[in-house]
Length: 418
Image (tube, rainbow, N blue to C red; front, side, top):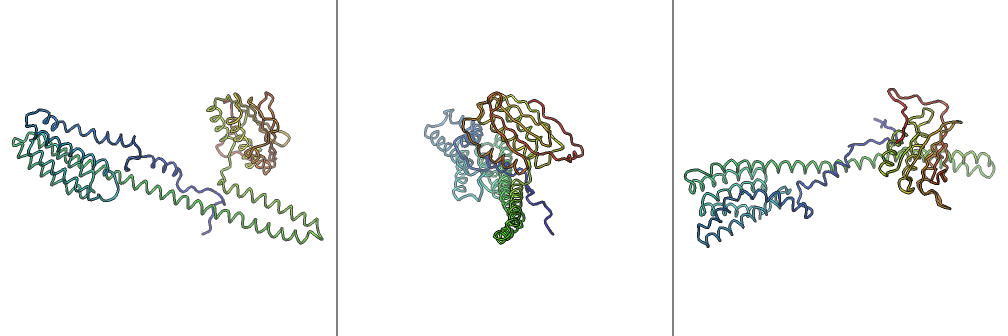
């Protein structure tokens, strides 16, 4: 089936994908910290849950045991906390299967929990909750579920031995179960976000590839015929030149016309037929000038029925370029834009009360390009000093003798003073 799209018409396969990729890339969840601030925030988030170790710390602070036992238990608790932070900080939300050292650290945590709870009493049973949470954070979902039952069994067995009246350990079973389930859910959420990020990255690559293919196809369709015609007419003009200079001049004129049209087609293909409009540029002008603190008076209608689309686009480009120059270079306090029609043409004048053009100053690249755009639309560009000493730009384009009818439901508003 033939491609019925207009050459150069931009087909955005995924609107807004660039911004989504940027948003996803700035999200630290699911990745190791990339700077000190992210590391501090994650460490604070992980460390705040260590407040529940108040029971074993309080038991150590009571001083009811021998100094050697207290010192050994304190070292064991410090080693347990360090291993817990190591696993949760570096392993949680990290893609790929866990390394061997992770299993070793989790086994050491379990051994410390059993040894400390069995020797120090029921206040230390809370360590099993941290072991279950560490397993949920560090292990794949299936392995974490399998490790939960033995941990709960150890908690219950050691709890019966050190807490025969069941004052503490039954209340720890539910936090251990919920903590593991919560960490498994967080890991699954992070995995989903990671897959979504990768999918967005893939979509971005596919969109870029599709855009390159579209541009290559459209440029081939647009330029193939024009360049072939230019080549043929150039050869024909070369053969006519010695004996028939008049016919050769006509062929050269045709070459100029074809090349100008090819230039217009290429520009429209590159810009995706997104020709600017006066209504859109008026809104952008108000915003830009207001942001720069420049007082604005805009006397430009949003729609002029006598303007052809290419002429309106040229005036919209003129308004954009003039406002950009006022904001960047003029140092003005006031900007005035007005559009007048008469004698078969429309004239857009933008002036300011800024520094104005310098002596011998030449047109920059922006104004040179604008002059070329206006010339292609059959118009012209004039620049000079404004009446109050600033810079004045006047863009002139011809009017269409047959006005373009308004679209259904459309209205031709006017741009009031900004």
